Image (cartoon, rainbow, N blue to C red; front, side):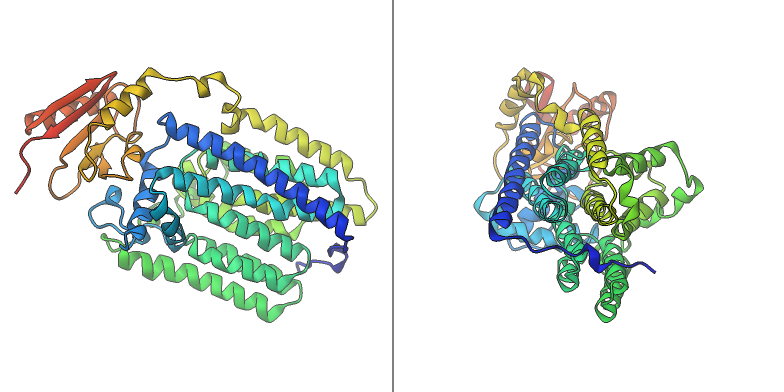
Length: 461
């Protein structure tokens, strides 16, 4: 049976110590927020953000802000975002987006949410183990590769889950079980799979002695995922199904691969493997399970944003295991040093390492040319654009992805990067599509540094 011993509970500190602890936590959070903002906004300025996914999420939030049900033209005509992933939490950004209608609004929100998650982690480490542990945990979470990959790749709804998990698990580590349950419950509104994560949180709470609360939370989490995947998403999806069932379970044909092993090792390295000694690490199991059993290899590795929700889980489990170790009279400083070393060694391999690079801040003639071309497109137009041009347009036009076939009238404008690499077509494929558009009645408006803007003179009736 999994237990959380009362010996792990927090020891009250004098008021001055609490103030020092809070000051440290919020200082680290503010520093991380600045770092995350610098990277994500600079990526957007350099056309490193994409329609899949920043454009999709901005279209959903823009739709909510306009009083419509989260429609995403990039996914198809009148396609509701809730028909792809169950993430009603995105509507929380609508009031801010009405005031600041820009993709940068989403990037700022993500940076702040990811940064604030460090506060409960640092506070827990400081109360349990002191300043060195607090700094180590703050660095281990804040500079972790999972958070870096999220900040470096667009915006994603999971940024809401990260602070919720941090608050929930730190509360459980301190045996504030009701608070842990309340922080976990909103996870079901972030994404459909997180109901299973809520269920594991519930099981931990039940194992800690709050049986009714824990089992109720576990049942509610399972039910939430079942309803989202089995009812809500298929009802709202224009294709009457859940798009990701086709790859579910296919990864079992390759249960252990080098990529999966490396991902697990990268997850455990900043905890010196000690996270495995805390029952809280079980909260990572549902996310790893659906990823590793999927037939989509993109889910198996360290890329993209898929590990963001694991970072607070592993770091809180690390703190909890360290506290248990110290309570048993064993040394913790060597493990803190190992954690810091692992964080430092992994850092150069992931997106936060781009910030000190001169190349990141140097001007680019192609970027300037792209802005000149995009400025020729009137607000309110319908546009088909290549992937990296999409999020530059989602706030003021109705944009779809060039290279996909959408039903309905042809867009008024097509804007294409004919020179760079982009999704979903290679350069030859893009040029073939451009030639087909010219044959269908589009004319060239301007061409600049490989960016080509076409306009349809005659619209469909």
